[in-house]
Length: 182
Image 1 (cartoon, rainbow, N blue to C red):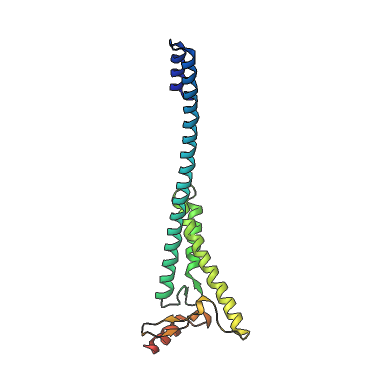
Image 2 (cartoon, rainbow, N blue to C red; image 1 turned 135 degrees about the vertical axis):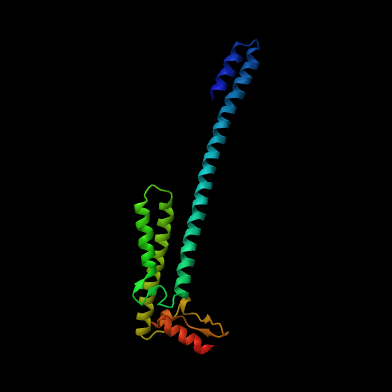
């Protein structure tokens, strides 16, 4: 029980109330103490859940922002998409900067954001490179491109084209193919 409860119980003990009523009030006050503890415990647990949920939403926003940014670079960078000149992966650079920045700023609140950005960029790099490897080996063994990235992509002219990643095309070849369709 809290200090105020102890004071109230001491006053109750020295009062002129009959013992039956004193007993009733003592039980009531001790029950209030345990209820208060349960409410406090529930509030603390709720706070933990809310904090965890808010952190999850923040990390989703960081990952989503990173993925959107890298997707835009991939689409609009005419120098090779995410692989500048076909050999320098931008997502690897973002991953290194993110993870390196989180280590350099350890203990700072920005470290968690940088770590999330670095992890997301690395995941995108790992997906791209493993997808290219598996697609290439599948096509070389006589298979046809399949999977979600082999689905036709709408063009500006209203037609469709197949994503370049399955055939090893560079960005200029893809742009030439799109231009021919216009």
